[in-house]
Image 1 (cartoon, helix red, strand yellow):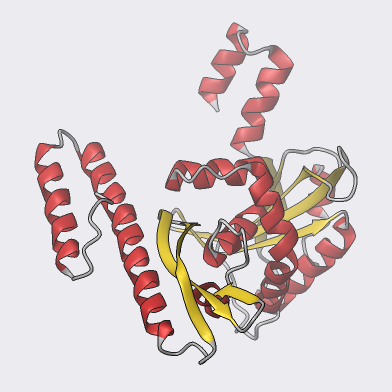
Image 2: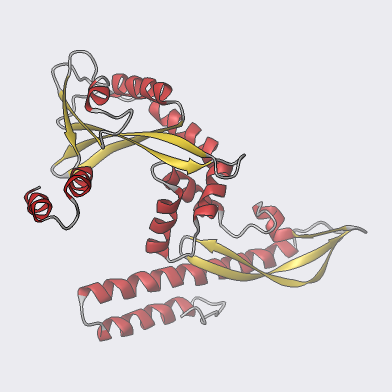
Amino acid sequence: MCRILSKGRSFLMDILTEIEQNLVKSGSLFEAEQIILKGVLELGQVIMQNFLESLDRSLKSQAPANYQVINKQPRTLNFIFGPVTFQRRYYQAGTKKREFYLDQQLKIKPRRRLSPHYLMMMAKIAQTTTMRNTADILNLVFDSGITADSVMHAVHELGNQVAKQTQAKEHQATPRHMPKNLTIEGDAFMIKGKKEAGQLTLVHHYRVYERVANQIINRHDFLSVGHQGRLEARLSDYLDRHYKLAGQTIFLASDAGPGYEPAKLLSLVPQGAHGEYFLDRYHCLQKIEHTLGRHNELAMRAIKAV
């Protein structure tokens, strides 16, 4: 489908026609959804390629007078909808300077393979899970070949920016309300340090959300590298700013590991509210398997009962 590189709008109809033809041949709703998703992703690749090459053409007339075109060279960027290879002009600027004017105008760094939006998405997802899990999630959804190291570089580059955006959101003025079902989850995971090879750093993570009619709303994540106390202070401030919790029951969940024991989670409950701690289903099943053994008949019966 990506062979369609027409500069007119007819390529849109060509792709839509191809999707419709493939849908007719599909044998299930599962297969039909796969066909549509694949077509939409490839459509995004074609549109982006045409957009970038069209922008490069228009920038030619806007380039400084001393810019002379040397040639055109390809570049590939990975977007959330897949890799896009496009041609752009290479300029001689004066006697020594040479540059790709399109790259300079779009502020695309040399040798950068990922789009700015994709980098930000990686950094945001990595705020709530491990680098490897982030890569697995993105590859499952977009089949983009992202590695855990790529995620780590995105976090190091944009982590502070994401954290500032997140904390700014925490302090937004919103009317305090009384939630019907408020849950706080706590967990921690290890990441590789940047300075020393093999060094592991503990990342603390709390998640607050409301559950209404089996839907999760108003979800907010709190993360901190090695500073659990500061994170708990942010969490407490957030609860005070956004909720009226006097007389309310707050549900708390964790894996009951070090720093996230039931008593520790219950200590997060504001004065005047009541806390109910429970071990979430995933960690409950995990502990049953670790305690009784994966192939123990009693363990299998217990797992079915949970």
